[in-house]
Length: 102
Image 1: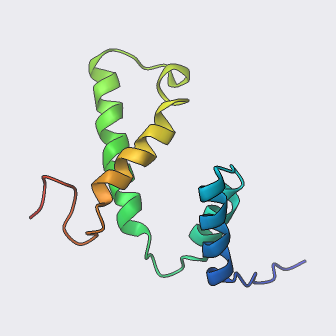
Image 2 (image 1 turned 180 degrees about the horizontal axis):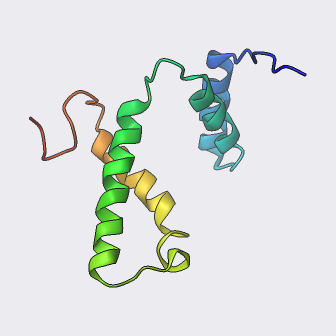
């Protein structure tokens, strides 16, 4: 059996994401995942880089504190890191993280 290419209606997914976010519905995650899946040209890569930098910072901080158990470090951190990475994003994908502009 072969995988058929799935056609994702970006406009519809974006509208659905916005609607679910406004309603506070966790189904928004499904639409975000579909938009990420459809990003074949890497338009969301700068956000991923901001998230990666934040995750790296937190892992280093936990290591410095001697906390190495992922059950203690990851469950509540991932969502918070997403939010903080969104702050780093600051609508300026080519300028780097806030305070670290080239």
